[in-house]
Amino acid sequence: MAMTENIPGLDHFRQTRLDVLMHEALMLKLENRGLRMGLCTISNARSGACTEDCSFCAQSGSSAAKAPVYPLKSIDELLCEAETAIRSGAQRFSIVTSGRGPSERLLDQVAERVFKIRQKVGISVCCSLGIMSRSKIKVLKQAGLSRYHHNLEASEEFFPRVCTTHSFEERLATIKAAIACGLEVCAGGIIGLGENDKDRYSMACQLADLGVVSIPLNILVPIRGTRLEDMPLLSIPEILRTISMFRIMAPSAALRIAGGRETALNQVQALAFMAGADAMLIGGYLTTRGRPPEMDTALTEEIRQLWKEMSHH
Image 1 (tube, rainbow, N blue to C red):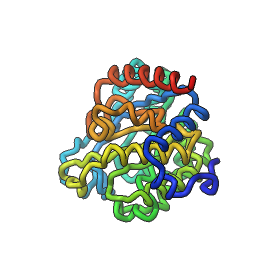
Image 2: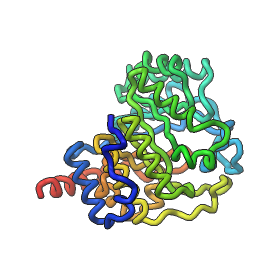
Image 3: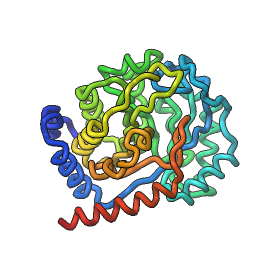
C-alpha cells in the first residue's frame, strides 16, 4: 500500500513545469505498469429517482435535470450489454445502480446478474451500488464479483459542498469494507466541482493511502438542471497537471480517464495518456453519451505505439 509520506508535497505539483511533470508521470507509468491499457464499460442498470443530493448528478433527487427513470434491467438486457462490451475490447463490465445503497431484494437481484454474466459471458464484473456494509459486499463476492467501485468524489474537506445526505466517512467505510472482503477497489472522483489544487491533492493522498487498484478521474461536464450547471470547465493544462499528480502519487494503480474526457479534452485526449493515465471508460456514461468504442480502440493502439517509442528512450 502506498503511504503519503513517500510522495511529493503539493508544492512539487504547483511549481514543476507542466511538460516536466508529465514526463515524470509517464516514466513512472511505464516503469510500474508497462504498456498496459485498461478498457472498461458501464451499464446504467437502474436509473434516476435517487434520494441523495450530489451536486453534479442528473439522477439526484435535488436535480431538475431530466434523467431517465427505470427499475433494474433484466438479466437478458445486461447479458446482451456485457457481450457488446467484450466485443468492443473492454476487459471489465460494471453494473451501476442509482440510490444511496441497495435493499436486500435489489442486492440479490444484482448478485444473480453478476453470476449469470460471469457464467455466460466471462467478462470481469464490477458493481457500483452505493454505500454498502461488509455483509452485503460478501454477497456480491460470492456471486463472482471481482471489483467494487465507489468514488470518494472529492477531498474530505470539500465533500460537504458536494453532498449533504451522506458523509465522506460513509464512503470511506464502504471502500474499506470492500477491501476487507478481499475485493479489488476502483475509487476516484470528479475534478472541476469548484475545488482547488489542495483539495485534489488531499483526495489523491487519501486514495494512495487506501491502496486502491484503479483510480477513475472524471472531469465535470456541467449538466443543466444540476446545482453545478454554470460551473466553468477546467483548462486543459489544469486537467493534465492533475492527471500527472494522481499518477505520481499512485504509481502502481490503473489511472482511468472517465466521464468528461471527450468534452474537456476534445481533440487532445491523447495528452491524458502522455500524463500518466493508462485506462479509460468506453461506450458512454450514466446519463451522458461517449463516442463510438471503435474510436477509443483505435486511440488505444496509437497510444501504445507512442508509449513503446517513449520506453525505448
